[in-house]
Amino acid sequence: MLKRKYRLTNNSAFKATYRLKNSYYKSGIILWVGKEKTEEYPTRAAFVVSKKTHKRAVRRNRLKRLMREAYRLILKNNSVPKSQKYMSLIFIGQEKALDKDFKEIQSVVYELLNGIKE
Image (cartoon, rainbow, N blue to C red; front, side, top):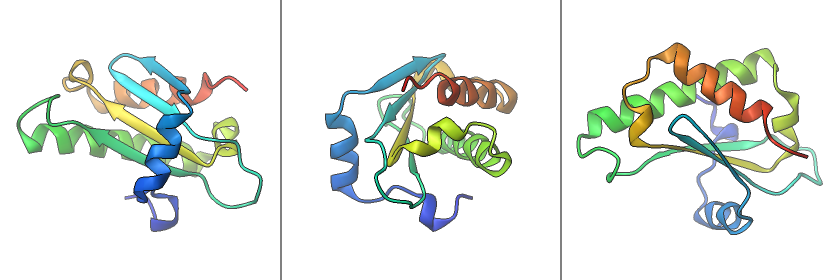
């Protein structure tokens, strides 16, 4: 589980991130990137899987857990410091990503974070 200080929860922060229209897509996962930081505080992340993706909450929550754990491990190892320049990150899981296992989700999340353009 991500620590509370790393979670994006504020509705206005979601809207501000979406408003920038800075997104990346890979294998059923979309990454929305917020503004660059001006002050020193942790990057906040959110994980979203819409009800339109799958009607069963169990399937949606599993995908969210896998994405969250992949991001947590990447954050722990500090293997993609480029992603820590931004205020917020939003990961959106789509139907294509539902049947992937943890290793595939982890590689997709890593490639998305590594592919952020400056």
